[in-house]
Structure formats: C-alpha cells, structure tokens
Length: 219
Image (cartoon, rainbow, N blue to C red):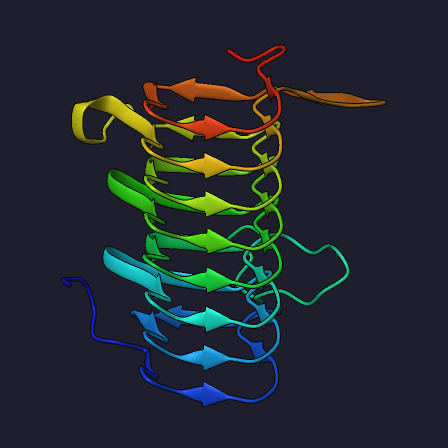
C-alpha cells in the first residue's frame, strides 16, 4: 500500500480479550489486524500511527466484540514525543472497510491526516451502537458510503478538510443508513465553542436517517 513496511502485521488474528494499541504507542509503518476477531475492546486512544504515504491502521473485515477507541483520553498515557499531539494521531489512512463493531466507534479528539487522499475508509462499516467523531480534526476524505449505524452518528465540533482530496470531497456518505440522529452541529462549552466545519463537499446522497439531522451552527 506504499509508505513504510508494516510495523505490526497481525492479519487473521483471534484475540479472546482486549487489544491495547494506545497510551504512548508510536508505530512507524502500517499496523494491520485485517480479517481478525477481537472479542472485547480495541483501545487505540492516544496512540500514534505514522505511515503518511500509505495505510496507518487497518481493521478491514475485522469483528470487534465491544468498542473501537481511536480518540483522545486525557486520563491515559501518551507518547513521549512532544512534537505530536497527546491524543490519537493517524498520519496515513485508517481503514475500517467492512469492519463490524458490536458497540461504539469512539473517535473524539482524534487527528487524522491524509490531506491528498483518504483519511478514513469506512465504507460498509457496521456499528451496533454509536459512531462518535466529535471535536476531531480530519485532513483528507472520510468515506462512510454504505455504512450502517444502529444509533446516532455524532460529528459535532469536528473539522473536515477535503480541500486537497479528490474532487474536494471531505465526507462521502452516499448510501449510509443511520437508525438514530445525525449531529453535525457545534459543541458549546463554558469557555469555548467548537464549530462543525467542512472545507470541501459533503456528499450525503441516498442516505437514510430514521430520526433528525442537526446542522445548527455548521460552517
């Protein structure tokens, strides 16, 4: 897939417990758990996955028994490299093609950087509860086409920059199904407001949202 060679290649792995890939992990090269089965949580909070010319983190066709965490956890450890943000960082594509997550996808505060390519590939993703990508910074395209989310899709306060992506498409969600609410609005805190913003195009053609879609304060 280009970039450096794999830092971890664990395709077709069966893990009966949790998988920890965060709290200070600094991987230079692709981390792969493709077509695997992980019975409990996959915790990548505060992990740094660096493969800017290829795939940084790959869970294609993997079944995750509980939640996938790819965000910022202020209570957890982080990489000693102070030139990188404290939270989850992916420089290179995060791949969730056909991934099944039996609880939540939690990506609040994460940073995803593939400016001229695809930052997140999550087409045909299935999430049995919530997909929460709040206050995240994304450079590159997010592909949620044909994703199936049982409860809400929460994108509040995140910034999606597709200015260098193909056709300037920041979010490609054609054919997505959400059985709850979709939130693309701002987050208000006592000392700060996080606006939902998109630099480029949001493509939501043929999307099925069973409840409301909130775009209040979006820019």
